[in-house]
Length: 267
Image 1: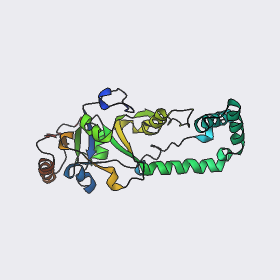
Image 2 (image 1 turned 90 degrees about the vertical axis):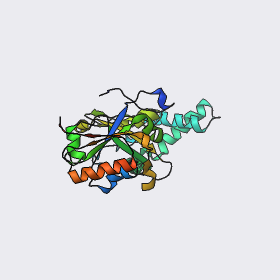
Image 3 (image 1 turned 180 degrees about the vertical axis):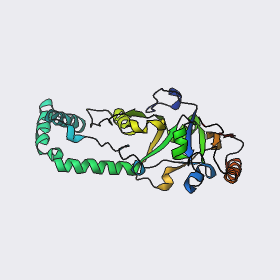
Image 4 (image 1 turned 135 degrees about the vertical axis):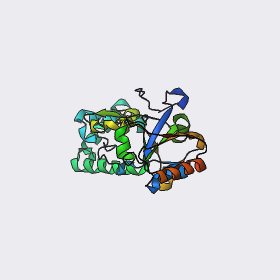
């Protein structure tokens, strides 16, 4: 399995090395999971719904700024907003706001950070994938103990509809996010989206994301893919034969003649 770090931020998808196929584990007994085949949909969920309460939950940490950093923050802010100011005027601006700004109010900052995460949840969508279709723990947890199925997508075609993505990094502690100018947008985004605790390392996750300027509803998060985006479907080795017959018919009807593999020998 590829270990390369892939996060598309700028340029086109041709500028990046992508895994040829990424996979999604699903369970046919779930009506929403059926739509991944019957409607050719993927669903970009709000991080608010994640099982891992720390996943994408790290707010921008204004509370970690030192007094000097607060001063530097307002210098940076003044240079962006007050283009005609002299050096001394920028410094006066920074001194004033360093003293009177609510950034010094611990309770206000705490509420601000909590609200920023709440707003983030309403606008962000995450699709959790993996490069590994033969992960026993994933079959057990996300495909009803091998009675489900696993869809393989052509990464290049899929990402034309979703943007870019990259592998999740598993760490002992989720990294902090600092405001600009102390941390750039790209690093802040990576720290929030592409880091999880090591206890989730078994997932070998490769994820992609979308962000909507307005609060995203269910319909916004349901992204329809073309048939060409589907490479194969792997059938769990414990799937009921009647269910298998049904899913094979649905694949033929909605996805066409793509490869269907029966996972017989669990690794």
